[in-house]
Image 1 (cartoon, rainbow, N blue to C red):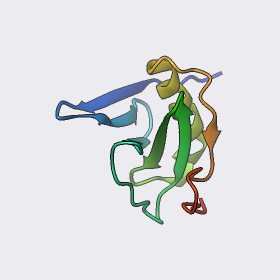
Image 2: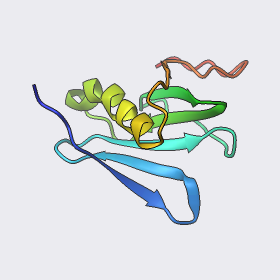
Image 3: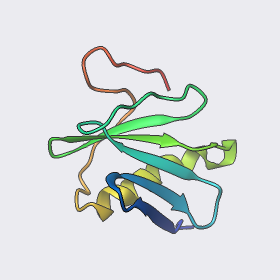
Image 4: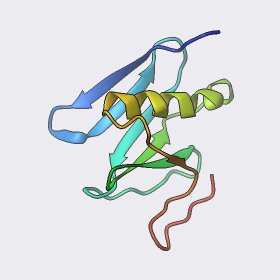
Length: 103
């Protein structure tokens, strides 16, 4: 069984602006803290959402390639472990009222 290795790029000026990178593929995912910042989904990318306690995150791919689409959930699960919230439920739609986006 193959295991992807993920790396994290952080913004020193914004603790919520992480980017997850796959070491072995082209997959990149931008992380948004929806409690702290505006998020305008890109219709050409995949967006998923997750709660870590009461904090809501949005995850959006960057330049997604078809062969990397299946690894998006495993990258988000890795990030959930990284932030010490392995039980994060990954949601397909924005759970905030009136913000449902089709993926």
